[in-house]
Length: 128
Length: 131
Image (cartoon, rainbow over all chains, first blue to last red; front, top):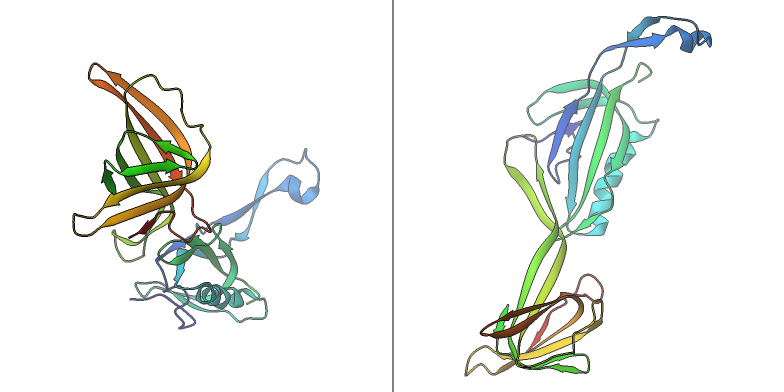
């Protein structure tokens, strides 16, 4: 089974895995808010929003094809693009996900195929 | 590639005498292996950095003061044969001397020169074989 974002197979050219980052409450130091370093204590300030990362490798036969794969993903990171449903290989879905960043893991690797490791981070934002 | 007792082994302007064998090894300097989200087995493997290592072994009959210089880059060429009917094969490679190792025993002395093959552009195989 393939993974999908907005029903499009963005990552299927190569191997990839889903990583759900820790969801937890946000704890803030009182001194951070007051600006007084002698101000002791911390307080709760809601929860961190959900973050899901895709760790993988784009694989193509040509530079042009590899750029096309990369560009298709990066296009989803623009702030004007709507959120959508992210679905892993096993059918698990996360709704309201936006692509927050796409980071290439170094340069293009040139062997039998051209490939590029990456981490793509999705998240749910209150504004999306 | 293994060539036993090749003819006329040259490195630049030098002729290396008494060569008993030349071997060409191909080694991965970086192999990528990657896993998907479905199971435990590797689903993608590729060699994205590789190295061609040439070892030239000479029998040394007497005193010898002609060690190659480490880091020297030149064209290595030697002649071999694919069989009595197949005719001569010429192998050429631009290589850099990486090590020079001597072995001496009661039965004689040998010197093994190790070179790293250099590609002209990173795509072309450093080893060229001509018939």
